Length: 127
Image 1 (cartoon, rainbow, N blue to C red):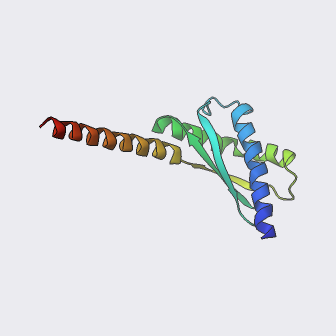
Image 2 (cartoon, rainbow, N blue to C red):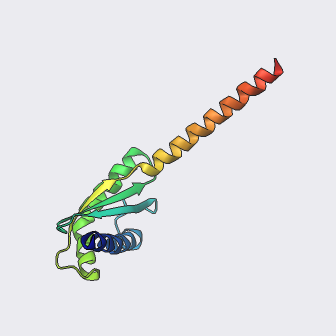
Image 3 (cartoon, helix red, strand yellow):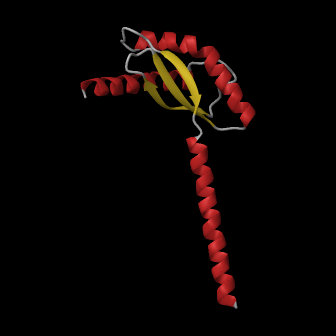
């Protein structure tokens, strides 16, 4: 239990710092304003940290942002090491998180289903 709390606190700190770095400190033009850190998962041994990133845009923009983040991972890791007091600074592995887009798509589908159902009921009443 204690270890899970520790990892959770570390995840929170690393998330906060990486979000701040990605949002305001990276100069790479590939990483735009439509990029946000969704969550981080650090392994128990602190060797690796998966950083889940959401990117609004087409497939080319997503690929470009992910390439930019991969190239900047050493720099980001260095800044995290300076700001978060850890004996080991985990290696950062950036992953694309498309859950936000999935949620928007599901919402659109649900709205379309409701609209179609309403139209069928109006047609049924008119008959």
